[in-house]
View 1 (cartoon, rainbow, N blue to C red):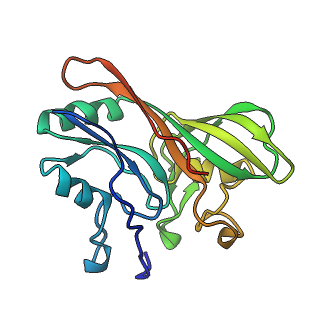
View 2 (cartoon, one colour):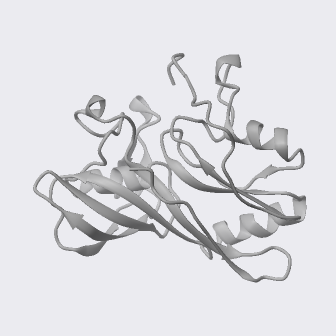
Length: 214
C-alpha cells in the first residue's frame, strides 16, 4: 500500500451500540485495522476504540469499501460473532455499480480464489489451488454504461466481490486494482449495505443497514 494514505476525517457514524455490539458505517478510504508503519495507524478500529475502549475486531472491510461493520464489545461477543462468520451464519448484502449491462438479471459466481503472489494484494481465480468462493448477484437496474447490483457473498474471501465481478466481465467502477479507469470515479463503488446476525446475548436476530452513498 502506498504512503499517500489520506483517510477521510468523517466523524464516527454509529448505527448501533449496546453491551455486546458496536455497529458503525465505515467510510470509504479508511483502513479497518492499522497497516505497517506509523502513516497507516489511523483506522476504523482505532477510532472505534476511542469511543468504546473495549471494542474488539470481528471482521474487516477493504479500505476502499464503505458500509456496515460490526465490532464486539466483549471477548464473549467476539467469540460468538466470530463463529457466526466462520460458519457462514451471517447474511451480508452489498450494493455495487458495475461497468456495462450485466445479464442475466440474477445468478451465482462460483469461482475459487487465491492471492496473486507476484501482484499481491491482488487476488485471482485459480481452479487448482484457490479456496472456494461463491457470490450471488441481482441486478437492480442497468443501462449500456453500467449496472447497479446487489451482491450476496456466501463466503468471505479477500477481494471476492471485486474479482468475481471482473470474472463476469463487469468490474466494479472506481476499483483501483481491477478496473481499467478508476480515476473516472471518486471511489470504489462498493458498499456493505446490510448485515444480519444473531445477538451474542440471547441469540435474537438483528439486522443492521446503511444506505449506499452513491
